[in-house]
Image 1 (cartoon, rainbow, N blue to C red):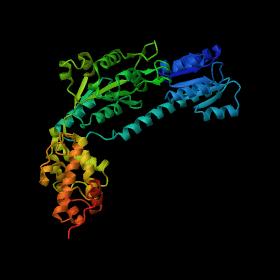
Image 2 (cartoon, rainbow, N blue to C red; image 1 turned 90 degrees about the vertical axis):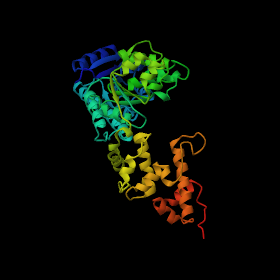
Image 3 (cartoon, rainbow, N blue to C red; image 1 turned 30 degrees about the horizontal axis):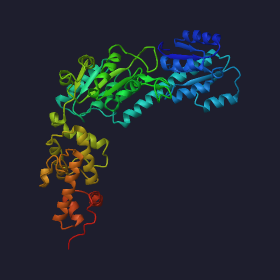
Length: 459
């Protein structure tokens, strides 16, 4: 049994605690003991056990109350309950309350070893399933696509650093796949079976920074009605991904630097110092060296993050990969589309894609919906990504004033194309759909979307 596997033993009888600590210590477990419910809750926060082994009845509170407090704190720790006066009713009540298992005192050593081994394995499986589910939901199961030299260089860097615990700084424009790189680094590391925790630094208010990252104890501040586990504790043994790291204000940068330098941090409302065992991967689309020169980003934090940099190229820098990436997107998220039609790959490769792969995915999704089940038509794709092709000079901001929002401008173009097609076909919707290169069955949707559904066909 791995020496790092931690067991928290909770019992109001000192003899029982010491006997179990000695027994499990010989099995290779790292044990901590608590004699009361408040002490046990404190140890759960600070000791971070893999399993809690608790007496059912104690003067300070029951084992079921301890289990409830652990669950309310957001933890899925397996809790094994023990009792010296156990009955079938006690066992059923314990399991129904969420306990992993129930043992009767005096505890049989062989049975205890088996239950703890299964509880540890159960916890590992729960973490693995949670991680794989998160990765699958975010598309992280996909690999980086592209045969160009630029993408080969990125994959080589990933291969070099994945198996290490080095801090990685992934840079690149929005939509280039930084999140995917972080997920793949985690999955290829020895930490793959441990949690992968993502934190959007731009979404955390400065007043909640310490609570979000390091956790807090109940009563530490107004509104702290329960204990909360911080993101670094959630990522224990695994990987924490700090997205949009360049957005952190100076005060928050200083607090983050400490835990990155030596792993030490403090839970809000707690005096003891903890040490994190989480690998750090930071993501940013900002030029951090320039921000350092301007005094907007701490130089020491930048150097601490920039241990192993990976820079992702924008899509326009490896256009030769665009058809391959498009086919991969069509094959995974757009199964209804029939692939790329004649000339479609050339149209896609001719665009600069300022939104990179994210923009490409959006255009392909829209084209698949509009075009129906057949191959994506080159004319339709060009109409969606190149306004000049339709004879409509739609410059940035043409959807209204200084509006440079991509979706708004595309919607404005879409409406203009529909109007022009209807005018050219004298209001005949079926003919207009054919001219636009879309499935006639989807024409009604687009007319309603842009308030054109009440236009009668011309005589």
